[in-house]
Image 1 (spheres, rainbow, N blue to C red):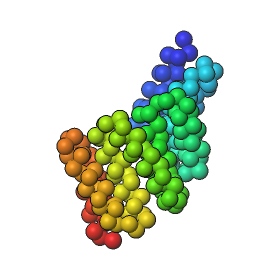
Image 2 (tube, helix red, strand yellow):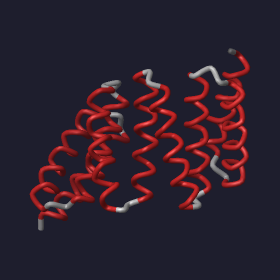
Image 3 (spheres, one colour):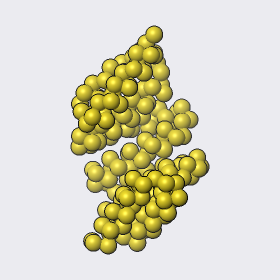
Length: 178
């Protein structure tokens, strides 16, 4: 059953991603992608594009990451998959931030945040606020960055998300050091 093979390949991708071997992780993603495409499994294709884009982002291959994230975005919009779409918007915001197009980054931050507010997942909202704070920081709009970091900090503390809480505190400290 090809669906199961694709699922197993995505798990191998996850393992190699966790080990930091992003190239091997993407090898498994591309194998899974071929199966999802043969099955015309749009959800699987979109999720695989997303993960390939994420891995390329961490490899600092921004133009390639952008290509895959945009493909995931287009499919997810058609599928009405709001949670996946919000994650992809966050990814696009981060890619555009690294490319240096802060306005486009902010656009995706705001769209993703709006969608996450509709979904009412506090941890995801806090993550989006932290991401938007980063964009504001790069735009030198420090007051807006601090506002988002503070809101994200409060939400991450309430949700018990220590990793995000630490990220927020680090970002707040960074703004005060600028």
